[in-house]
Length: 375
Image (cartoon, rainbow, N blue to C red; front, top):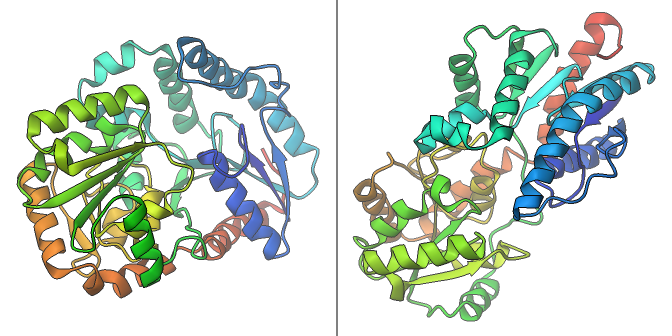
């Protein structure tokens, strides 16, 4: 069996493309042959890189449309040319035996509020909804992989006429890279970030502050006496808005905003609790990264959270500032050490080798069912 991964970009640090790269590496360790079909293979190499400018957003739309249309045709052609191939599609293209659902746009818009306005103001959203309605209501793929039991349920709610069978296989976490810090590493990380040994540090990580629940955390912080908040991620505009909100909430003197960082591990090592009360997550890899470093998690019941967060590893809360504050107080009162072992053990079930093996079971089942071949 040869596994073909269809994804616009495959490589570390590229979001969904990073997932494809980690799967590819795990399959190579297991001796499985893999191939790639990317935007470059879809004759889309002429499209410029994406940025946060208006031109960059238009480029993103062009890339999505190109890989969804031209890429679909060429990906199907490529897969048919590889004898014994089973194809796994991660994004955009309407091709492949298996589609990995990395997010449901309608669910994300609904949970953020003002869904209709958000959809209408962005032409890419309208295109994606139309494309995915065709994807899920036809037999474009033979199987849909959802990343969590929560997402599996949501897909059925959003697409009640779902024509394809589904299964659940989550993402993995790099357990070597994300591990509990030594006492020296923790002290050094706290010192570099300006925290004293006795400080109680709450960590928020996210590039979409509103969807990830930062306003809720800032409001909750006002009710958690003495706690400090470390916010990682967000562009300059988001950070400026967050600073204003912190000032209005009366907690600005207890907040540190780093913006994007090349490596989140220092922040994880410095923190006492990870708090991300997100409105929507298709999976939420950062929760696993926090648990793998021994941090308890306080979050809403999104993505992978219901599968990994228990009273032994953190708290699951509704999207309410007082509930978040109460959970943070509870976790901080117990101390990080009481959660560390259980948090790490929860993450260890999600190594990339384990996840890649689950995918292989699924793919081999499809290959055996029809003697190989790909869409």
